[in-house]
Amino acid sequence: MMAERSSVFPFKEALAYCTRSIRVRFLRVLMIMISIVLGVAFMVWLLTWSHLVSVLGVSVGKEVQAYGLWVALLSLIICGIGIVNSTLMAVYERYGEIGTLKCLGAIDSHILKIFVLESFLLGLIGGVIGAFAGWGIAVLWCGMMAGFPPELEAATIQTLVYVGEAIAIAVLLAVAASAYPAYRAAKLNPADALRKVV
Image: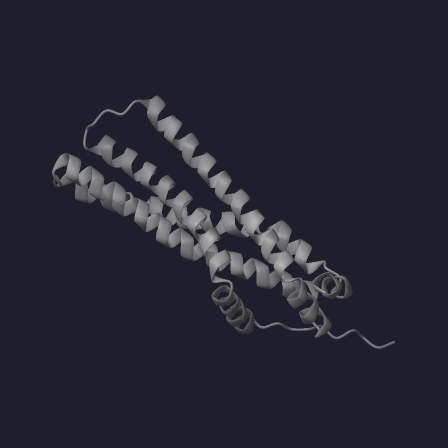
């Protein structure tokens, strides 16, 4: 009995395939990116603004901060639902591509790698843009309100932690939200995938 050969899909080739796919499907990618950028920007703006306002001595009620955090959490949940929906649509649109890849020797883990890596890249890019946008707006807003006092600079540096946390959350959210659609794409039967295209 012959041993089954394992198929290899190098990371470098997977990354090149994903970046090419992102360029080709720019409008769909843009929809996902906008939801990630807005959700992350709002969260970072809220956390940074709350911290800077408390450092500057402006009293903000605990209820307002708690309400803001719930709204930020809700926006991230809505962002995750949008990613799931967009990724499911991307899987549907790419049935022919998935079927062809499987007919050419791609195994389930290769298809899974493609979709998860694409989501990782979108989460990373959207997280970076959204986190720095939210952080910058909060710093400028608080600076203009308080007249850019000296203590604002040290407090601003402390808030960069929120930027790092937000980028990590964006990547995690994007990968977690794409897990089910990626698994569904990986389990497609090549013959069924090609038949659905026709």
